[in-house]
Image 1: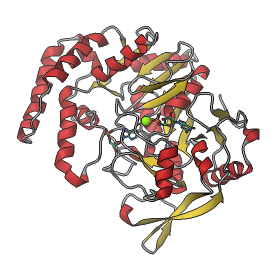
Image 2: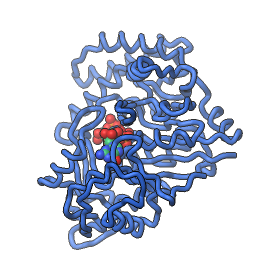
Image 3: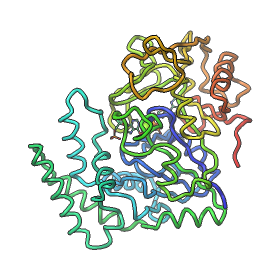
Image 4: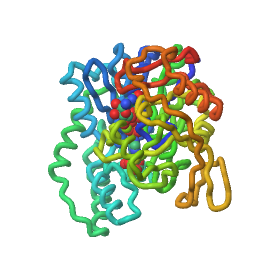
Length: 426
Ligand code: GDP
Ligand code: IMO
Ligand code: MG
């Protein structure tokens, strides 16, 4: 039996997962999403084109591979239709090779409204969600009120009407005014559109593929620090974004998980509210945002920026069982004289190397400083061309994290990717 490899974001999302899944796709037979929904925005750049994927896995561009949307995903048929149609207009027909688990839960129009309504009641405490209905859809799943993709094949209207009416009661009790007529009409059309895709028993497909020794790459969405259990709760998303989520989100037994690729930016970003110990509020942070073009691919919101955080990375590596590391956006740091790396936190009079679940407000990062490389690395094609200071930075991180950095990304394009000799593909 072949094992499934997983790619997981180690920070607060937007690490560059989409780009690397696309780069690794030629090495795999199947690419699968296992959690999240259209809150994700995964950017791919190649041949001068840019694509942003939300629910569709990032393995659709290279080599006609099978892509799977697993049971752990929450699917908005409308966003899905928009995404699939845009791809079809670019000559990529997915109906034959995108399979959707019948057990994925549907995001209803009223889930989107509820998401926005709940945020409105939180005022200053708001999470800063993407407003895509993610929380309400997962809440319905857990409270056993959800609708699944498989439901569209059987007496759907009755089930939909019941769910919608339940949501309407909640919204009425909140005195929240909304109009979903237009949204609902489009959404219902997209349910029909969805029917041309292959709806499958995902867990059987995945396990039979592994038995046939097909290789699978599972594509994480969001990041470890947004995980519902281990992230900075309540400023998190509503799914398990960690490697364990792949087992429940696809139906894979834990012993059938192979490599866990942990992906991180050479610095750190976060979009939405919540703690961010190394966040910069000064000129340096502004510069990172400008050079890194740190604006959300889904909401367009400016991402908060800060230095890389080893405490958080060690925590994420531990939770996920990371076996190989991938470092992104190294080119953005080319513009800084000095690079700071948080190696511990000072909380009150205590110094800790553990990521706390509380006291976020009072965290003061303790930094090590390394010299910047101050040269353009966007055009290099091999690790032999790394400037000495970049080598030092990588060595420092590998020493601290005890895991090899096997891929270094030096620009947004597919080609701007340095696969190091240490990369181990089973
Ligand atoms: P994802 O959600 O993890 O797939 O990441 P996003 O696509 O939301 O955000 C990553 C952003 O960084 C996108 O705009 C990518 O095009 C861009 N990107 C990815 N890798 C690199 C890199 O190495 N250098 C630079 N400058 N940009 C990158
Ligand atoms: P990718 O896959 C970055 C953040 C939101 C908000 C919190 C909860 O592109 O890395 P939600 O809509 O999920 O209920 O919002 O999580 N968030 C992300 N931040 N990248 C993402 O996905 C995100 N998906 C959700 O900004 O703070
Ligand atoms: Mg993203």
